[in-house]
Length: 142
Image 1 (tube, one colour):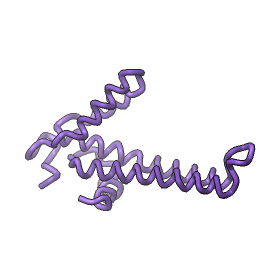
Image 2 (cartoon, rainbow, N blue to C red):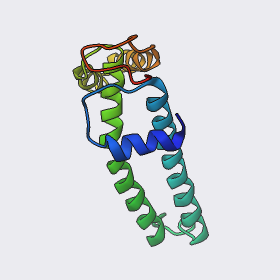
Image 3 (cartoon, one colour):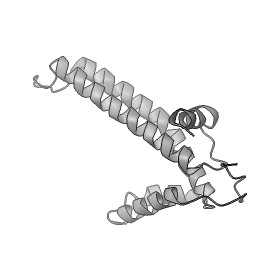
Image 4 (cartoon, helix red, strand yellow):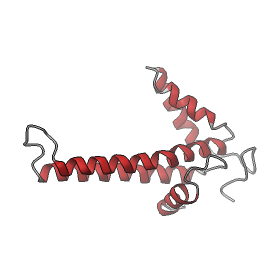
């Protein structure tokens, strides 16, 4: 699995598909792609704002910087659905219900408990998937 494969699967083939399973490689390659996208938007935003003098103005934000910010936000919203879906499929791979992702997100809003929930969700994404078939489908590595 490569970065291109993971993006193709998560954004193309399984954009809003919660059923099935996702391997660790699929999940983490897509997480890396989302991180790279976010980093690229931030760099372009800072470069555009700096070049057009956004930081020297009293307003602090140029019109081009605003457009880059809006475009980046819309792109990130578009990546939100496949990000949640691949996380649910990753939980399915370790034979856990996808509803635990919702529980983790909800607990993330609670002070202190949110840290524990985030660490627990992180650990689940690191676990090896169930060998063979499980109740959510066939092994994604076969």
